[in-house]
Length: 169
Image (cartoon, rainbow, N blue to C red; front, side, top):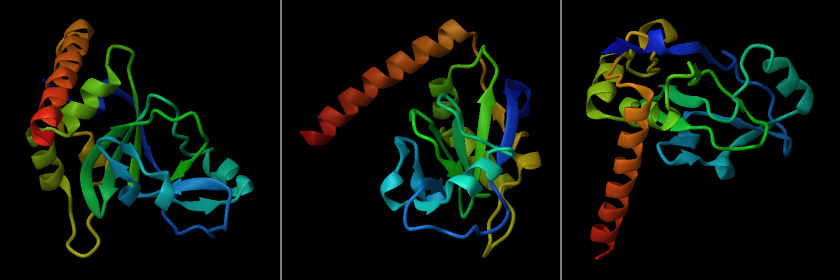
């Protein structure tokens, strides 16, 4: 077992203010756009390219990073599988992992009941719920070797296909 802060190279979030939105431009993702299965860009707002470039100096989501909700609905993780530029609001943390961490394993672990319950314990506030970065990194994660992480992800994917087939039947 380890703490999340011990296996990530960086944990950052987006701007702590509402930026001016545009009719089109660079997608600006909030917690409502995040689910374990991915990012819903269809409901994302947009910011200008200039603002995106400025905000990217603080935090830039890159392919393979984990996006983890930390405001409003907290404790939901997904892997950034997208080759497009986008930026995130304060309610989304961008986790950059060490090389011995499989992103899909970490996503599954963070979405597990154990980690979700911890995320809720570390979330403060009632109307404006927040899982602060300094509390987020305290979440404990089971950490097998990389090869075992990858086998676990493969097996979980196989089982999810069976679950989908059973649900369809």
